[in-house]
Image 1 (cartoon, rainbow, N blue to C red):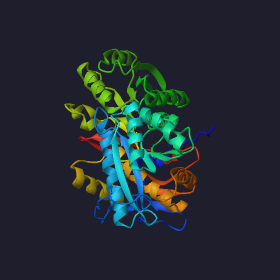
Image 2: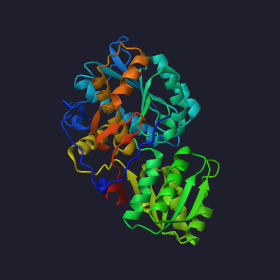
Image 3: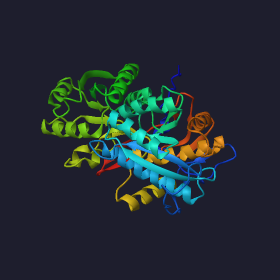
Image 4: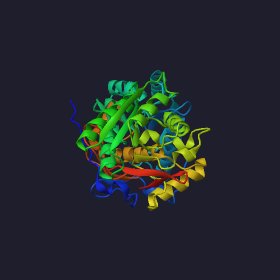
Length: 405
């Protein structure tokens, strides 16, 4: 059984310094973001190299459907990182091929995507993007002994096997950190929660938030659930929160449902503070949503696109030039994920002619030895549990953009 890894919310969570030289140091520390500046994109040599001469990394996530904002950002940023690495000489001297498959945030489709990538020759999986599909696919990677690094599937259920690691925070840590931040910054004394009881991501965060809220002296005056079959009308949940005098509504949910809640709260004249977690990232891109309703919304996230450090600004510039939009947290997670894989490969001295299972074992062992400075954390480390250790940051939506707090 794996031990739980607790990530504490530091007082410096609002301003994490990112940066570095993009080189591996003698201590094994790698800067995941450092080579974002000044490196031209180099096309992956997909389909042109013989087996054993390149590392083949697969990616799985929703690039169509309701969660496409997440998956598309992940695959875009991963390709940027792969191109940079190939242009700089590759991983451990070998070039990298990256191929992405769409799973539409569906577990069965995700398993099908995994099988398709195996047929292509995938040796390492960067994915999946969302939790429920990742739980299904992690069973398959465990059977094959394949190393898996998910950028954003945050449930502890995805890391029950020794071959799977996370870039993002776990659900329990997000719930705990959110309650601590709300209490320590005096944002509210009475809090309501609206969550998806049918989703392991949402319900997992909700449970730890309630537990930590009690420790922090917050009064949870309403716990209102919905399910995947009832996520278009939140008037009942909002009315209960309003009647209970909730000054803040905690939303451990995805951005689509959050946009509906904000719209319906506005129509009924209810104006609490809304506070979310990483699933909220993407709300400004919801089609036909009045983004002015999101002004003042706060969320915990490891990445703020307006941060002024050189690494973040270089990545944001490159992403905007390539894709015409500002990258979200999921893009930053994926960019870091590719560089984390690079650090593990170089720590292990791995080569692409290794078997999938031997490569998986080597990289899993290497993950507990590396330290990576990236866009989403400075000095990121990993335990054998698969959980990442880094400090979260808070952002607020201001003037239609995410701003660091």
